[in-house]
Image (tube, rainbow, N blue to C red; front, side):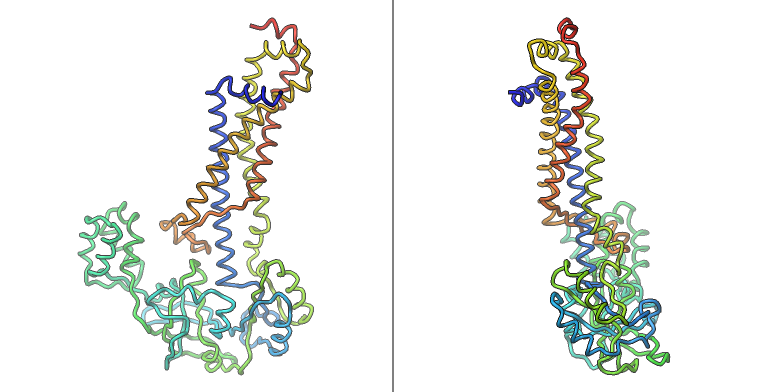
Length: 475
């Protein structure tokens, strides 16, 4: 009976109730979608870090990570590999030779880390082979009489290997993408010109187009004008095992794009046999063993087993390699809970205000209910249920709206291409796919009910303080 009465009471002033429910709906919707967006960003960053950059566990010689001394190699490599391959939960592994050096072209040079890899083993650990930009080559799949190097897109731009030019083909691409005729007409002034670097091309576009068109269509224009000469030459200079400087010409096998500018600018991959030959390393020797496990839950257990078996080596898992990522994944649910609690705390003040108004307007009615025998517990319960009904009604519609928005955007993602440079500088993709778990909705439901109960306490106590005789005389 009290439940039914409480539900009817919230609709005695439908305009006021609808306003409160709408405010709760908007607040919950904003919170759910914001959490889904942040969760999608973190999940994508985690997946890219594990699948493309660091994997789950790395083993190196003691102090190798401090100075990258090429002389610190893993000496009992066969014993290490035999032991690692026998541990349950390890899916695959790959050996790497690592040296620091310089990558040079005729016009530019950049500091890099050169990794000598076995392409077949790398495919089992990383997904980098899937990130080769179409038309730039392959992941060491083509046979060549030259030594080959795989480089990142950002490094290729810095070395002027990637160039930009406007021709009839690029203009046709832009027209097919819906770029306005006024823009393509202006771009015809650049036909036949070749720009050696991205910054030069951007500067020319800024001077040619107005600010709004440059910001809106700049990314599409750069993509259409993007060009690459296959088998471009790059010279790699580094120190060999005996600290002697070595320089060798490599041909670009392909260009990868993983949406992490710092990684793309510094990591160059070559075949391990080429680096061994040039740097004087023995066959089978390497600096780093990278391990991929079948279940992330095994991370701590497997790390401990390898450390116990090989105390002379440095064994680090992904949490130690990227502590910022570990912190976000470990505390993400607590952060989301705090975030939603702040939103609901703000909404609670609106609910309290509405319930206080309802109590004051119904002073005579509440007095009569008390006079005919309704005890304080029932009056308190009725007002509490009214507050909870307001919260739940708004919360459910807000969660439904949030879930639908996540469902729509998760399939195609949200593109922030205008912020891609800044986001990729810290390793995050500018194309975000929101994602959220069912467990989060359970957490939000509990918080909403709790908010409704807390919001009802003060108005309910105000109602309990009413004197029935005085309340009945109130007009």
